[in-house]
Image 1 (spheres, rainbow, N blue to C red):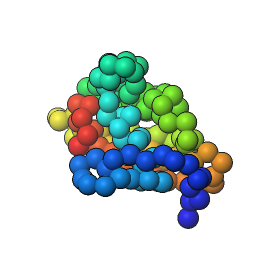
Image 2: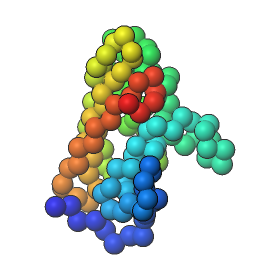
Image 3: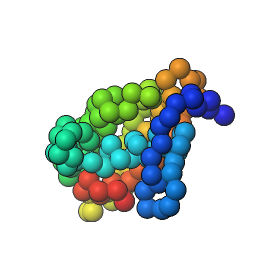
Length: 125
């Protein structure tokens, strides 16, 4: 079990009523960072990850470029975590669908969390 530090972070639960806290809040924050294209938030124009720049790229280089973009975005915008690994793999080449597996842990913790995401042309799948 991961020990969540006593901090006052919370977010409205996206797509549902209520709020998310703890690990769920961090997982939701990660997804929000990755699904936001830079420039989409006027007061934070650099916020997000430029996944659209890479998802339709050549299959030989797109996964590694996505991994680097994800790592850079999470290191910049989510200071509460340490990213252990990021792995992007093509799932459906004809539709540009990629599966992303992010392993992360809270800073100062040894317990890892595995988070899976799917993207298609830069949009959550």
